[in-house]
Length: 50
Image (tube, rainbow, N blue to C red; front, top):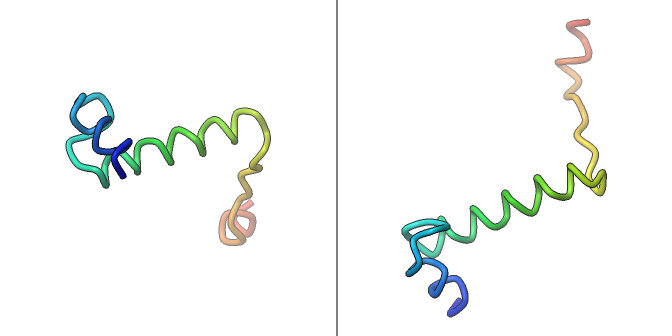
Protein backbone atom coordinates (compact mmCIF):
# COMPACT_ATOMS: atom_id res chain seq x y z
CA UNK A 1 0.00 0.00 0.00
CA UNK A 2 2.84 2.41 0.73
CA UNK A 3 4.17 1.90 -2.80
CA UNK A 4 0.77 2.74 -4.27
CA UNK A 5 0.51 5.78 -2.00
CA UNK A 6 3.95 6.97 -3.14
CA UNK A 7 2.83 6.67 -6.76
CA UNK A 8 -0.41 8.49 -5.92
CA UNK A 9 1.59 11.39 -4.55
CA UNK A 10 3.41 11.76 -7.87
CA UNK A 11 0.06 12.23 -9.63
CA UNK A 12 1.28 10.34 -12.68
CA UNK A 13 -0.87 7.24 -12.22
CA UNK A 14 -3.97 8.58 -10.51
CA UNK A 15 -5.33 10.70 -7.70
CA UNK A 16 -6.24 7.84 -5.33
CA UNK A 17 -4.69 4.53 -4.34
CA UNK A 18 -7.57 2.75 -6.12
CA UNK A 19 -6.97 4.61 -9.38
CA UNK A 20 -3.21 3.94 -9.19
CA UNK A 21 -3.85 0.23 -8.68
CA UNK A 22 -6.37 0.20 -11.54
CA UNK A 23 -3.90 1.96 -13.85
CA UNK A 24 -1.11 -0.51 -13.07
CA UNK A 25 -3.42 -3.51 -13.53
CA UNK A 26 -4.67 -2.18 -16.88
CA UNK A 27 -1.10 -1.55 -18.05
CA UNK A 28 -0.12 -5.09 -17.04
CA UNK A 29 -3.06 -6.62 -18.88
CA UNK A 30 -2.30 -4.60 -22.03
CA UNK A 31 1.33 -5.71 -21.89
CA UNK A 32 0.34 -9.35 -21.38
CA UNK A 33 -2.00 -9.15 -24.40
CA UNK A 34 0.70 -7.49 -26.52
CA UNK A 35 3.15 -10.28 -25.60
CA UNK A 36 0.49 -12.96 -26.27
CA UNK A 37 0.50 -14.17 -22.66
CA UNK A 38 -3.25 -13.52 -22.70
CA UNK A 39 -5.40 -14.23 -25.74
CA UNK A 40 -8.52 -12.12 -26.18
CA UNK A 41 -11.47 -14.27 -27.17
CA UNK A 42 -14.66 -13.11 -28.84
CA UNK A 43 -17.85 -13.66 -26.90
CA UNK A 44 -20.37 -16.18 -28.21
CA UNK A 45 -22.79 -13.39 -29.12
CA UNK A 46 -20.12 -11.82 -31.36
CA UNK A 47 -19.47 -15.17 -33.06
CA UNK A 48 -23.18 -15.66 -33.77
CA UNK A 49 -23.42 -12.38 -35.68
CA UNK A 50 -21.00 -13.54 -38.39
